[in-house]
Amino acid sequence: MRRDLHQHNRLAWDAATPAHSSHKHDEAGFLRAGGTTLFDDEVHLLLGTGPEGHVLEDLRESGARPLAGLRLLHAPCNAGQDTLCLAQLGADVTGVDISPTAIVAAETLAEATGIAARFAVADLYDWLPAQEPGFDLVFMSYGALIWMSDLDALFAAVAAVLKPGGRFVGIEFHPLAQMYDEQGRLAYPYMGGAHVVGPTGVGDYVANSGGALAPSGFQEGQVGFKNPHATHEFSWGVADILGAQLRAGLALEVVREYPYANGCKIWPDLVEQPGRRFAPAGGAVPPLMFGWSSRRPE
Image (cartoon, rainbow, N blue to C red; front, side, top):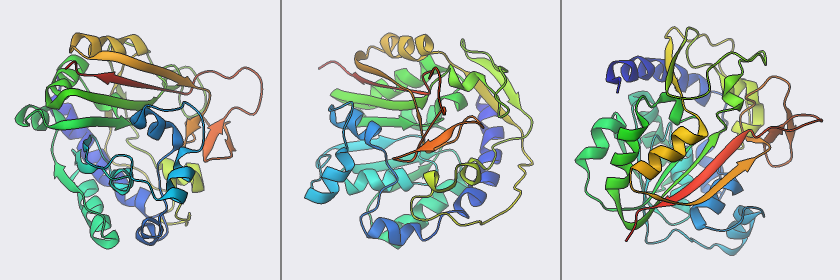
């Protein structure tokens, strides 16, 4: 476990978060009007349905709150947009992130929308062991695991905060897809927690992805953002991620792979598809995301 490197990454996220937020027009108004930053895929995993179909559209039309009565931990939560959308589905939500800048943004957005949620600034490796086993769901999504230096310790702590019968749900960019750099070159290791230094830090992927990551409306915002802080990432393969859950005593129930990337243009030649998804224009399509649901035994 490398808490020192986690803090280096915190600096990079503190720098990047205002740039990302600058491209999103009136997020508060968008959420108040019933908009969502979630995708159908993670909601299917959280509800145990799918894997296909426009579940969010159906929920919005019906006004249903299928997560009502459930305590949900969103960790890490970044600037809180998805956290608040999970609360709109009825969950009693807590969001945790290592970046104080991101948490200030999350709390500001929560106040502006009137959506109830709790937020905490912390390294998950410190915060999780201090909690009781009171959560029905723990949710991780989209680029979370590359910042985690020890999956066995993390997933053991996740399992410990779940109630018996509670579930750990995640959706991630596929480790295979994350082997490629922004020029589409095979550049990074696949597995084993290999340490990768990113000298250019967290970039402005919201600017690169346009409206797909700004469903409230994309605006130009900050132009030419350059992060002054390097990052430290850890390469975990599918077997690493699923194996660590099994070693933590969790029972895998669902594993899915997806031929598209939600929201983020992770490769330069991907083409935006309906539903704010990115995929190759043609030819063979590799897995660009994968998701899971595992359960703490009763």
